[in-house]
Each structure stands twice: as structure tokens, then as C-alpha cells.
Length: 287
Image (cartoon, rainbow, N blue to C red):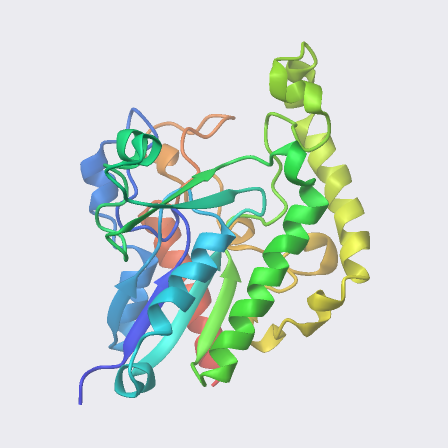
């Protein structure tokens, strides 16, 4: 019988095609990292399918798995040994476009994107900050938790083993501050002070969000046994993968000189090793 299949999805922390964002670190170095999905596939003796996509949000992550698992025949579905979901930031908003030569917007701007993604007829893109006209960050976090519950229900209904984990903190705010004041999105002079005080704003938001989520019923329905670090917020006793990495040794910029402001927030080889071990240890202790 064929080896069991390991299916993963996530954002750039999962994407095998992630490039370097540090001008001092070459793409060749980054391409040669043995990334955590590959490490897990080797250790579990499984065949890897990776739908991780740079800059993606949680709608893409959820959709990429449901879209690909749903059409599988019974034999392929029964051969799934494990699904691992590495969720991204809540503030990201995903869009899907159909490739259409008669649509100038899609054909002109997005025709070269996602050539190697799971559906050649469609293109995914995203914005990386919260649009204040489409809900605040409280809404965006709840929106992501709904995707988590939807995917959890889908996987359990199909009797598919899975583990979820939060890669980047779910509640991470945008430097633009657009979640709190529309003026910041249009070049307000207050933007500089907002960036300087982002840590304070983020800390206050974390406290408010933690209180709000206590009363959000879906939070209680997420299966803690299958979600590593749930409820992800440190204020509620959870954690993300980002929280578990050493910010001085587990990020790309440390391959040169570590500074106060990291040039790249993506895991280096040490970081990928640690992520794989976190997930593997959780799998071993729950079986």
C-alpha cells in the first residue's frame, strides 16, 4: 500500500517557495532550508502535500484544504494519515480570482501569480492589514475562529486525523493602526506615534481581546486535544509557534547580525527544526 499522506497548509511559514526578506541573506540559503513540513514527512514516513502560500490568510488556509480533500475518492481520503493546519494572522483578508483573458483587472495584474498553486484556473491574493471599513480586529479574530471551527468540523466529519497550530499570533496588529482609527490609513500625522507605541497598543488590545473571547461560544468548541497551544493567546494560557521561537536565533536575520528590528520574521533552519519538534512531540504525546 502507498505511504500515508501528510497534508499541510499555512502562510509563508509553511510555503516551500518563501524567499528571503533580508537583503543580507540570499534566496539560495532560504531555499535550502529543510522546512518543518518536510522534516515531519520524513520523520512520520509520509508523502507530503503542501498547500502553504506566502501572505495567505485564514480563509485561504481553510479553503485550500476543503477544496482539495472534498473531491478525493474514498481510497485517497482514507490514505490521509494526518492534516496539519498552521493558521496565520487574523488581520489578513484573502481574495480569489478566476483567470479570465477578457477580464483586464485579473489578466493584467494577477496573471503571473500562483502558477504552482492547487487550482490553475484560480488565483489567490490577500491584503495584509485590516480594512477598517470591513470590521475591526475583534471581528477579524472571531472571523478566523469561525474558519477554525468550520475546518475542525469538516475534518472530524470525514474521520481525518489532524492537528492545528497558530503560526503567527492571531491577534497581531498592523503597523498602520488602521484597526483603530481610519485617519491612520490615509497618511495622518499621527501614524509615526502610532508605530512608536505599537507595543503598548498591542498589549492593551491583547487584554481586551482575551476578555471578549471568554464569552465567544465557538472558543469553547475548539478541540484542545487537536489544537497545539489553544487558545493561542498567552493571556489565556495559550501560545503560537512564534511565541516558542527564540527571536535571536530562530529567524533569518540572525544569520548575519541581530538588531533591534528583525529584517525577516520567518524561521531559519533552527526555527524550522524547532517547529517540527513542537508538532511531533504533540503528536507523540496524544497518540
